[in-house]
Length: 226
Image (cartoon, rainbow, N blue to C red; front, side):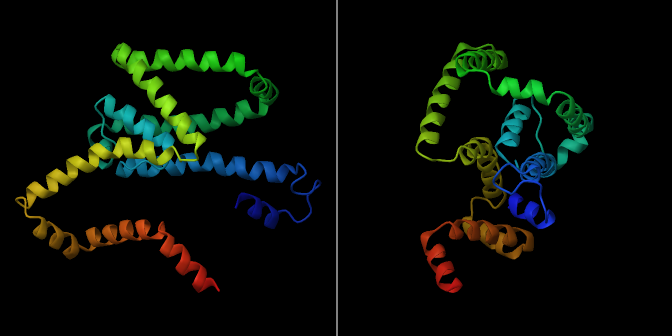
């Protein structure tokens, strides 16, 4: 998508696209940086992570007793504006460091894996232990690391798993709260969802997402496109 946008804007590049055109390199990197702010908006305002990185950040906020969402701006406005200002300052420093340190950063990427992997493992172990000062957290980290490796090996996306781990507790708590509010009457709960325009629209969107991932939907889309 980024390449198509770059080709539409740039009519006469110095180097053809696919052979090292600067415009083709700038477009995806710009979109990558722009996606960060877009992922933080639903995380801070609705408590819904926009990507795997913000899902991890939601987990970190939960650990520290903070609940991302509308109440974060009311209960902890200092934290909300700290995150917003940190994003703004990070973009400024990214511009400065990107223009001045590009040669140094390319050397870091070229470092051998025999040096990078031990450093990454050391920082991961220290970070996992520092949360609760418990050695079992390191075992959990190693176990999920192996699990993630096999998922990556067999082509399973890691993002939905992280989102599921983070959102499962929220889903369970709100489901229990909704059932209790209707005095354990599931039929009344269903009627309440159908009678509320907002709840019905959200339910319809969820069902549509699930249906769109089925083989029958793909078959129907191909038949209609023909």
